[in-house]
Structures are given as C-alpha cells and as structure tokens.
Amino acid sequence: MVIKKINCCKCIYYYITWDPAYPKGCKLYGFKSATLPSILVKQSSGIACAKFTPKVK
Image 1 (cartoon, rainbow, N blue to C red):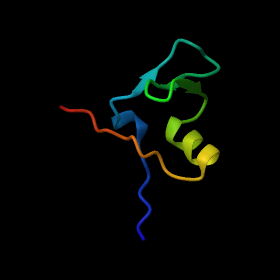
Image 2 (cartoon, one colour; image 1 turned 90 degrees about the horizontal axis):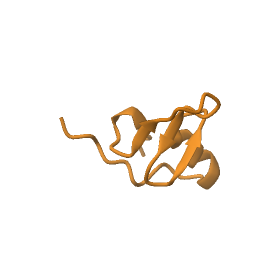
Image 3 (tube, rainbow, N blue to C red; image 1 turned 45 degrees about the horizontal axis):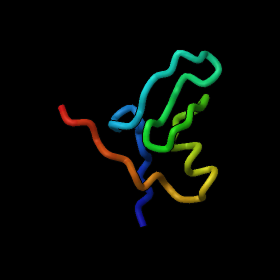
Image 4 (cartoon, helix red, strand yellow; image 1 turned 180 degrees about the horizontal axis):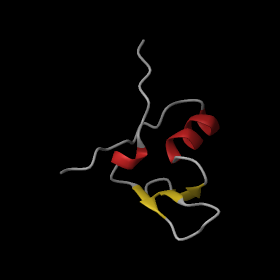
C-alpha cells in the first residue's frame, strides 16, 4: 500500500484565512487550523482526506 501525502494547497477547498492563529482553512469541512487541513483530518479521523479535489489550471 502506497501512502500519498495530500497537499491542501492544490485542493479546490483550501483557502487562506485572515485569522493569524488559524491561517489555513477547508471550505468543504468548514474549519480553520494552524496546520494543513489534511493533517488535522488525518489526526482526527485516522484516515486520509477522501474529499481532495485538485484545482483546475
């Protein structure tokens, strides 16, 4: 099994917030965090983010 890191910066749901304490956010799950949202999802649920959708260039 290959474990692939998820880069939230390349996801359509990722955004930068104005909150200096929680600068990274996920529109789909509706939260802000100090770390990348995919890391917080992995820590909370134990599984990798299943909703990653790459941005269209």
